[in-house]
Image 1 (cartoon, rainbow, N blue to C red):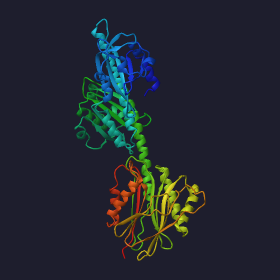
Image 2: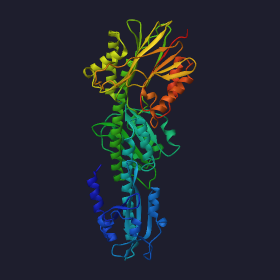
Image 3: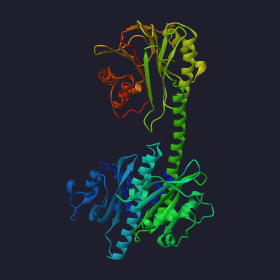
Length: 563
């Protein structure tokens, strides 16, 4: 795609007048042809209200703003056109113009209108001259629409890293603005071809697509445009006669030919997705009206779209592989939970929603040499594969430190904090380390814990009470306390029949909601589920989360027996 400098030269050399009007109706720019038509310099009109400066009635009088079709189009952010309107030139004379306006959109934001102006004050009265000007204006409008479409596709596809979502958005943008039908074929990891999307007129796409379809293979010698494009060939534009005369070819060519005949294609374009060196698939667009076949300009636009879509798909696949590695790492580190005596444990790990980045959440529970039960919940700062790797490092070292020496949790976490620079590049993390002391069957039970900047544990006790254990709070891991003071260790007795919940912030932080609201929501739902089986409680807490969360969630629950 040509850069801004090229398009600026194109605009400056246009023989048709072009005026750019901002959202409020003020003139942002005019090209030299517009300067000549209006008898005004660019500097003299820039920033002026287009209606007040230029728009007049046939006698030269001013017009009410509510009667101005351009201002109405700006308010509606839609295209508009007009004929026989009068504009006031800089020399005081009136010029009769026809005009057309197309919206300008950047990053999803309306920026104003591109207004093309044609001089209708033609002394010869030659209708052929007027038709020629109208045809030229129409061609410029088509160019503007193509450029707008490419910009919108680039903006929309850049908002997702999920292949299915990207292709669904692509089809909605292409049909019906550029084509009547669109089909996407992708190379799979096994080297086969899969038709993953077909978009057409409303109500007809589902019947043709029928879900994902694995297509037959094809050799490099197959003359089919689809096969040649998938094998690194140039984009191909075909008319109805070329499509009908195409030889059967391979199984892939036959399936694609059947698709073109089924939709009654009169013109089609097939382009690679990606570059010639890295073809991830092919995009085929189809028109069914013989009066409007694709032209060479359409071929260039679709080829550009194909390159951009290929890049999005390649990025999505890279992201998917990274996400799969991180999730596998997280799940493999979540060892089976012990069930000491009559104590019961349950845990859940829920990855971030599809399209979000992975995180570094984890939980752990294990018995120490003295029979004490250790509980851990943690969250590494960051949302990528590095965060997941850092979580794995902290997880392993904390287990070793906790097992190796007895001592209050605050002391153990101090040693972990000291060791962090040597064992990981992760800058910061939060966690809760707790010890459940007491006979696993008969108690009495005491909880000793420390928190390194982590959300407080929630204790549910018999009688319908719930409170957050906010003591034992210290700095985040990696913050390095400057005064050398040890981390605190808090103590709390655990009544028989009580339930303790440790969780990561993904359970309480919802976009658009503050932390206190999230904590109140969790407390309310936990109280309502306090008497449910432990697995049910965990499942329902996750199920009752409001939509919109973009973070991982780790949840660890302990229930003490009733005596």
